[in-house]
Image (tube, rainbow, N blue to C red):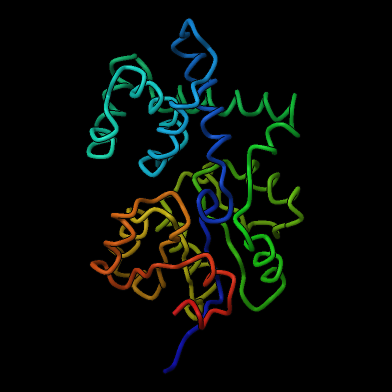
Length: 260
């Protein structure tokens, strides 16, 4: 079998490289408190656990405080799993907010936290086992790692640097680029040439399916990270969406032939 191994390995960050669930909840909770000003500002562990379970519905950071709002006003876990995007939009309208408003508040609060307590902020993140070593091994090799994320690039770079990974300039495509991930992949092909072979690892099935729909990206190999922020139902459904393949953390740490 003739296999075209990647020349670019495109990686999501949250849920593929780094697990920041605890930080997400704490930042979301602080932002929620700033916007809605509840009487009790001490976060609830039970609320956090439900938030963790529902993390797969979140596409971008501004939705996180809204998820907490939804839970505190009694919207059920089942309703959120079924129709989160509509719920989030309704919450914005009902509270006279915009996604930009909420996102700016969240990013500013995170910036302040990092400025005043970097060690505390970093302590709420962990890298998935073996991922840092894998990244370090790719830098400078024939395979160019590129991070494509909806997280602010500066946060990604800071976390990686402190983990001992210094990504080359231009290899972190964050939220500030304001492009859907399929467009970023398209720009990789334009920038690096027609012979470029892209493998893309993402933990959101919806994002992989958006790439699958682009006829000019049919050569991009798509992998759903089974260790990330997705549900068992999504992982089981991958067989219905070739060429998307399910990838385990063990496979990720091995030679590319093992991925297939």
